[in-house]
Image (cartoon, rainbow, N blue to C red; front, side, top):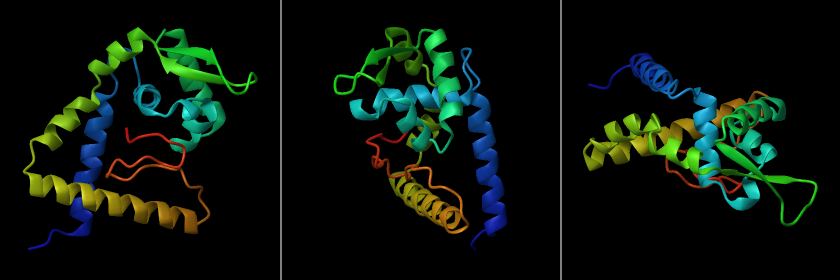
Length: 163
């Protein structure tokens, strides 16, 4: 028997809350962890405030605050762009890479990794389709496209890999 859409949504919401609560770790909040993941995986040309903001569907100001906190904590560092002297490129410091080794998202990764291959494949495909549907509905209703990734982990138009 197929579960109700509401019951599935409620379980998904609980998974999201549990995962989000794990992300308050080692003095970082979920947005800061997401930024560390982004800058660890993004192409060099996408390691800037604007690309990060676009990828995460947030404003440049909010992205700047997150990045400023990571710079202050010595987890990110600024480098002048090699192609445009007016812009900067952001990279993880050694400390930032060390922090990612203890990424709280690893708990979710381990849980997914424990699924049978067929379950994992079905979950990935279902989440990918769910995300596409939600983004499509958001775009149709006048919301802006966040440039987020599907569960498949394909890079977005900014060159960032899934986080």
